[in-house]
Amino acid sequence: MTDGFDFKAYLNQARQRVEAALDGSLAPERPESLREAMRYSLLAGGKRLRPILCLAACELAGGDAEHAMPTAVALEMIHTMSLIHDDLPAMDDDDLRRGRPTNHKVYGEAVAILAGDALLTRAFEMVALRSPGVPPERLLKVVGELSLVAGAPGLVGGQVVDLESEGKEVDFDTLEYIHLHKTGALLSACVITGATIGGADPALISALRVYARGIGLAFQIIDDILDITASSEVLGKTAGKDLVADKTTYPKLLGLEESRRRADALVGEAKDVLKPWEQRAMPLLALADFITSRDR
Image (cartoon, rainbow, N blue to C red; front, side):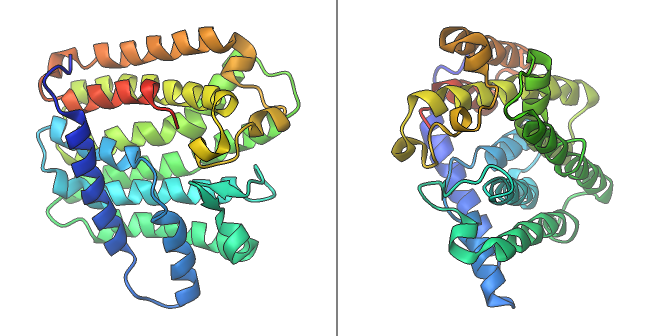
């Protein structure tokens, strides 16, 4: 379905635009130590899939991607906050993220926690105060979506169940609950907020929720597989952490081959639901394929 679409060029161009917007989102301000800690993690690289999903969904809905850029930045800020907090000793206790020491290893636990808090609140500032040209009623919907994903119904709730499940026998439904909240909720917010800013109708919003659920679960399945099969150098984070923490993962429940098949099936379902918008959905279709083909 993506024949003739230069996804590599699209991805590189979109990344450059996102990186520039991220760099400009944290202007000189005090305290400098806090700004430095925020920039350390926010500008540490990465695939930038979440903001790119937001921009692509906005364009699919017929909107101007530049109108969605502040929200795309906000989504990356929320994602970065979740990584900073996830790496803390009280959480997953990791020393490596995106190929370099985690935030708390460089700035200490207290500043890392506060840097995450500051990024989370700055995300709402980006949407509410730095989104010129977007109708207020659309921005209100975006704020509501981000509130849900960042709180107990989303990232926080998923993290708590994940922590409570360590070292325990977890069934498949609980595993999917964790990943639909820890990973899937934010990916869903990316496409829904982008499409909302672009003026999507209810049919497209509904289809995008199905799309996001599929790619969200597939993304986590591939993460679980790579945790076993890839090295720390390739991943940019500590490999094998799930095994050490005795976490239930897709490979642990299903095996590697069945996990890969499930990821492929989920991506297929995600792409199928966008068939009515196929020509304008090329970036989202290609991003779905990218999720299952990535090696990190």
